[in-house]
Image (tube, rainbow, N blue to C red; front, side, top):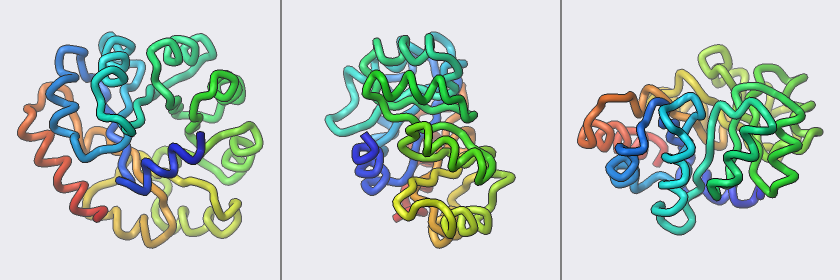
Length: 204
């Protein structure tokens, strides 16, 4: 499953975090994010499992659909039932990682220190969400990259903008989780498409 995550990040190193999206908005959000290979609906969004199930059914082949803010084993089971393949958490929780791997899902836990990073990898994580990104600048990515296994996927999340992705990439980041800098509830399809295009241009 790590290979699937790596392939999607190589196609476009961005994870669209759609916090607050309603299921009714999913069709036009999917259209506006046509270039994205990974879409995440946090579970603290309105009726998130409906949105995730819609994206699983309607996203183009090869697009990885996942849930964010997954905090419990029961939530992992709920996500698995939608057909989604990716479980993202803001924290390092071994039971959540274990539940995801037991169901053949990709586990991307949040870590904030090298100690958590090594522990998450030992627990079976497929990659590491460096969170919060505001506290983990490119210098931190470079330092982690020097000590972690060389094939570790590092995905800074939070505080990433089109202006700083180049510095993160140069430091060794494999991808980025993009939340409110990309999508906010209430925005229009055109505004989302513009923001998406700016991020795509920045990473390409």
